[in-house]
Image (tube, rainbow over all chains, first blue to last red; front, top):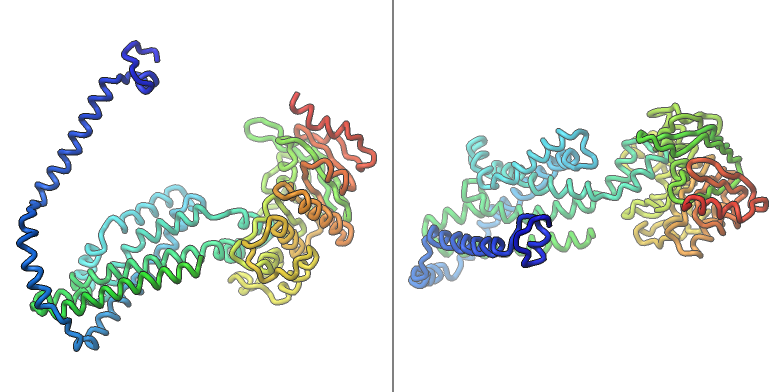
Length: 272
Length: 247
């Protein structure tokens, strides 16, 4: 307020070195920058609406050749479907096993040391930052094609979300029962099993179920890079132009994803 | 039963929170501590249970001196000393009975207790303690469903399951309505008399102190101002406890 420049708005009066014309100029710059960003994005993706119109015929041709779905293949589809679900279950379970100790280290209130906290947060962040598809590619090169690398990819990628949410749950935990139990003369292990575990377990289960639902969707896609399951079948029949089998697998996918979402939601509701 | 001798605590910033505090609570006695905010009442309790380490002085509980104990010996000594605080601090997702039974864990060293279970005989004891506070019929309810007054009684039952000689209560009625507060005070009164417990209770309610205490202890600036039976304590001196602080 010691500056003797323009004092047009309350803001410019309150902030040192801030004047109304400057604020206006800044606003114009921001708007122009925004337009520029959107425009270059359209240019980069080479968006051509006319292609969408002509593409309708290609789409119609696909739908004609894909109907009716080849339901005679339903029994053959059971195995890959089971594989997709099992990859997700394996990945979620292994993810939880790895995420719990990491979360304990990455929760500010229980971490054993500051540097451990940062290392654990780093690992969790890295696991999430690398997409599950990339993890799958890495594990396929390491252990070969099949469902195993898919499960490993989901496990590692799940650490990212599970570790962060577990850590947040631990940080928000009500510490009063923990302190109360410590004062009764209970041992550390007893405080852990009798106060900490019962407070955290329902939340952890809920988060894991939510992750399982997400992992079933991810596991569908992982088949595209050779990790087995429905995705692999979809890719194969797509390459063989066997569109009636493709549509069958799309229907299975739809049912599976919707079913997993419902079951996960119902179970989580029961936990709450 | 509980004997505090020349207990002092000076914070690192130089503030003297507790100065040469002497206090004795005999078995069967309910002693109530009154004092304004920041007078050192809670600090006194926390120094006794050793969540704060006093700078000097001694705390004797049933013949054991606490201030020099560490680790497992401190844990064992704390078995004699139960604490009830302003908030019930129950594990909300567990049953009321399980919450009460956790009070007894310290005396058990079994795999079952380590893994989250209870020795069967402790559940019987816990049910008895729950009966003591008049809530035996709520044993299987989730602790999260209780009212504030009920939860506080359950936390007292948990303290009883510990089978202590000394019961410390830090503003146990601060978040309760007047009726529930009276109920808790009657309970503490009865536990002291019938259970032969030494009860030391910090309060803000002067009326409750007069109604239930065997002795009232006044604290201001970390020093003991008076220590008298209610009948011999003029209201004027209690009022001074709060007035002088404002001056």
